[in-house]
Image (cartoon, rainbow, N blue to C red; front, side):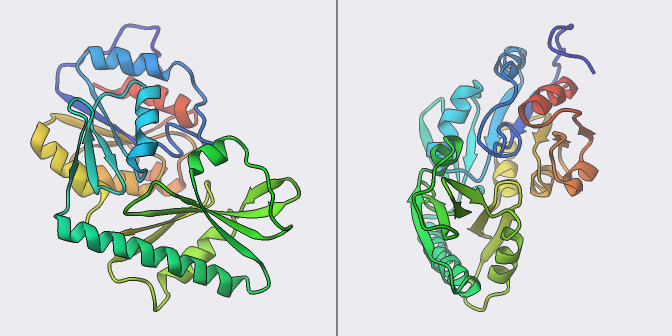
Length: 288
C-alpha cells in the first residue's frame, strides 16, 4: 500500500471524495486516530480533488470537523436536508419550506415516542432526557451525577430536523453506552403504532445511539443533486456503514475503513487495513 511519502497521485479527472464523520473520520469518542490526514487532504486538494462531508450531523457539528481536516467543499447535513457552501457561507435546503415544517414535526414526535418507549421498556428505571451538545459531552468522558442504573438520554440539541439520541446508563462516576440495548429499542420504535408517518429509525451499535429522521430525502438524494450541479467525473465515498455505500451505489466507488460493519465491508471496492482516520488516510491512496 503506497503512502503519502511516495510519489503523489496524478489526478487527471474531476474527482469528489465524500467523507462520513462518525465511525470514519472520528472514532466512538469523536477523536481522530491519525494526525497526518489533514496534510493528505490538503495535498490532494491542491491536485484538484474536491472533498465533501455527507453526514447526519447538524451544521454546528459539521463545521469544526471540516476545519480540523481542511475540508473546503460542500457540507451535507441532517440526512440530506441541507447543503452548506463554505465559499459563500450559505445554506441551501433541499426540501420546500412547507415540507421543512413537516420534517420538524416528525422529529419532535419521534423524540416524544423514544422517551415513551424507554419508559415502557424500563418501567422500574428512572429515565433522564438531556438536550445536550453530545459531541462535547462524549468526547470529554462525561461523568455521572444521576442515580445509579438510571438511564440518561443525551439528545443532540443542535439537530433541527433529525434525532440523534445517545442511550447511557449511570454507573458509579461514569455514563456507560447502552450498546447492547440500542438494537432492541430501535426495533420497538420501528414497529410502534405511534411512529410518525414517513419516519425512519436507525441505530449505531458502536456509538450506542438512536437515529430517527424523515424519509423525504436522504444522503443519497443530496449527493445526486450535488453531482448533477458539479458534474464530477468520479465520486468516491468513504464510510463505515451500509447506508454510506447506498449513498453512491450505481454512480461511484465505495471505500471502507477496517472498523466498518461487515455488510459495508462486503460492499466496498477496497477495505483499509487500518481503522477510522488512519484507514481513511490509507484509502485516499486509491483516489485517481
